Length: 257
Image (tube, rainbow, N blue to C red):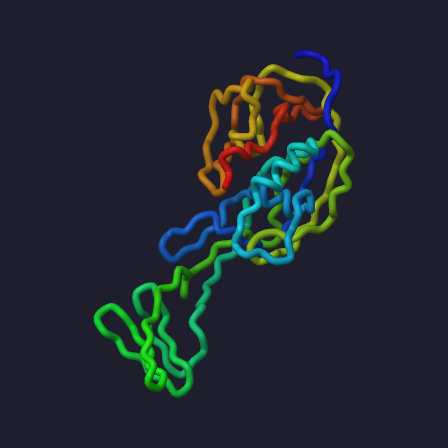
């Protein structure tokens, strides 16, 4: 163990979900499931460290936004659920309330007032006066079940920065923009150790080249896989309570769209 001579600012953050929170982590048939974690990129936007745009045409801005955080010397780890995750299981039905509808192949068939629909083989057509148009497929679920993280679920993550940070106490998370409370505690490393086991979650792609992953459980989620119970050979900050945080992490943006 070597003595710590210089270190960035470290903040241990604990969040509590105040509303049911949904991320489309995994889709299994008609079940849309949230994994028991919160990704680090989602946290960057929720905390206001990365810019949240009022409108979006579908363009993904991860690369440019995370490059800015790298230049600013700011990094956020994924949030690991504390204890057992609470879940909420619900159903949804996206069919419109109309007097007539039909289920097609990846398509929900409805017609406007005064029109009528015709099925020809696997295709559907809508007749509006003299006009006949073919209905295209829709890449969206129409019915299904959602397994989301429940209220009072808590999770822990770290913010590492070369400059002091004032983090918000309340944030919005997930596709439903659910409310969560964040408690931030500044923590000070007491030493640097050459290897150890990380109890929280890591993004393995963000580790420095000098760090070797000896063991760990991979979680395959988008946009980048995560690692839990990782045993590393490489420099780690040791905190007063014995927790370890790897040194030199930065967002690996080179392979992002």
